[in-house]
Length: 275
Image (cartoon, rainbow, N blue to C red; front, side):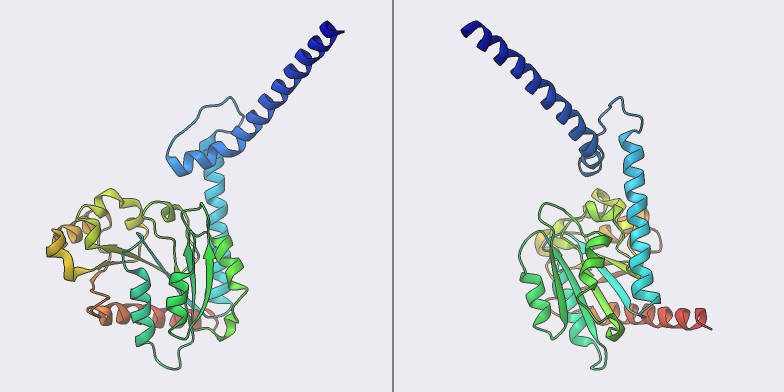
């Protein structure tokens, strides 16, 4: 009896091991493309479709989804949408606060704020009287157009003039994930060092404008602003660059004017396309 029980246990254990092995193989197929994207590794497996091909398909689907968000905002509801990307602590939220403070009384503004956790930034923007939808991404290091699309359900889009998207603080992941905005503003801070652009060229190349913030402390932290500007010109020639001290409300006017000019171009282009 004992011998039979032991043999059965062995067979059950073997079946369990085989089942687990199958599940692990299936799991690897699903997560490998994501692992390759998030950590820059490629894992070779004998699958019909490589991880690189799957990743390309995923990113193409993301771009298509971003196009849908853009159509919904820009063309269907005439909303001018501006994304702010950059590291945590670079000053994205304060720059948005300054822009909101300068906005005309008749401009209706909304914001979608992305953070891994918490609602601190959303609370700050709400204190300025604008509607804010907060997105906590958990373990994800960026917003994506699906999350933005879901957040848009909370707005009466036909009543909005401007929508700001504040991405999760990160200088890597957002590069591959357009959100459907009319403009992407990249915020780099002097506190990140004057090599920040050289370390993150891909995100710089996706930006329509770059803001160098916290210029007031550049000398204190030993950062050469001219070096940052030179690096921007090297990796993304002719990209407009603005120098700001958001806390001291310095340089905000030039940034606001540039975005307002883009806003006007957006309306002009839309008016022409509807005639």
